[in-house]
Picture 1 (spheres, rainbow, N blue to C red):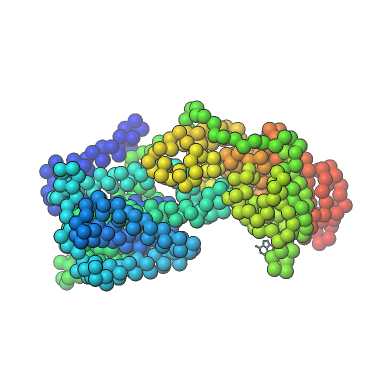
Picture 2 (cartoon, rainbow, N blue to C red; picture 1 turned 180 degrees about the horizontal axis):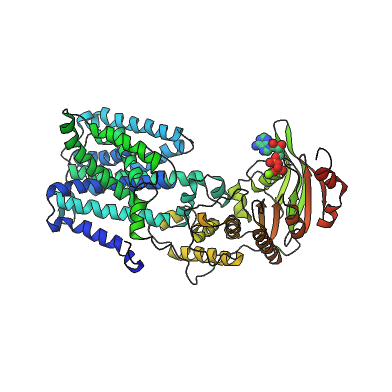
Length: 596
Ligand code: ADP
Ligand code: MG
């Protein structure tokens, strides 16, 4: 069974309405309380979806941020009789600042050390709560007042339930909006490495801190609600065990999906409650046996179903309709382009040494607007290294790289991208689960209406609609330009390799470049795909684009390029037109002579 598309869009609305109306439908208080907790946990889990599921940054420490939110409001409302709303503002501020400080240090840590560090600060904060005299040590703080809104008091179970779920729904919408924004697309790419987003102009280190703070603030808000639901706080629910439970919720529910957070929070809460009552009876002795069951479940899910359960439900519901490009929208601002024939890239005596090895030995060449230049040479000649010097992936040892008359040596790939140099990758780097349109739109990251930082809040609040329309229209325009106009809404991962390479070119074109750098664009392509690629590059050249390509395939290079630079052992051994290169003695020697 699956829903007709017209009804599919109404499913979330019906769900929200049903959830908010439950207390009116005569659901017993026990269930309302339990579902309040599901709401509280969902808010935290939504942050983890962003952090862990989408960006690939595992955190065991979210419970500690819940604690900061809860203790802040508990302290301010009981010790100073301040309003819970002040408690909320202060809680969000303190959680945000703590996350900023912790994130600035830990988000630079890679691999398994990041999760380990989250355990470390999760534990430290937990012990801090339990040992501070002003926070009541292990007894915590009691007598926390109810939240008031005008003359309405959120005093009892059902009223708090409704408030909690309103916040949970808003949290879900905020995360969903964010993920569909320019910054959100960048975050969705983080899991696949930093090189590609950096080359699109994304400050990946800053972006990681942003989502870390975002996730922490959601946790802090959950803590605020918790404190005013319970009217008391103590350190226990903010310890490492709960940090692990939150992670379990998103892993079981589906870490990559916002709805996975709600599903996981629901399942784990209900299952935990059931196991807590049932297991001691079966085993004949008391204890927290559900922790053991959860531990086993976590391992099983990570091993066999790391997408979680949500995809199964989504398959039943039918897929959401993809984000669409508007039919027409104002164009994004364009940078001025050089006149045809103008030298735009000048590499002068560029040198790169890796220890004693000279990978690029004082190489010089230039590229003009409206020209395709090929960089060829046997394996290990230094082509990729030269490419990386121009794109800022490697730092230059000595020599100059000038783009449109200005030095770009020593700039990061992010800064180079914003100057107007766009690139594709030898091994295609796309976000496979994103549509063709969204992948291409990533190239326009630097071209939005807002600054990349200002755009984040606008994205969360959906104040970015005009910007999104322009960006998506640009992505569609570039996709049509390269001939992928009829595949806008396919998943990038489902395309053939040749199409993926062309999609990378469309993404690069969305950067509004005057120079395109392509690393082995023809590798692995079938003949037809090569011909299509070659025709596309010739067309771009005709439009005034400068193209520098590193390539192995001789036929491809000879029939496409205007100018060829040949390297061997790090040194430029020849340079000229394809006709000149084909008969150049040093080139023939390098390719045919010697050991070959
Ligand atoms: P090509 O792309 O022409 O096949 P590369 O530019 O990848 O050649 O490599 C040129 C030389 O530099 C090779 O000898 C390679 O082993 C060496 N090299 C490339 N990258 C590094 C690195 N990061 N560290 C040390 N040596 C490297
Ligand atoms: Mg190479």
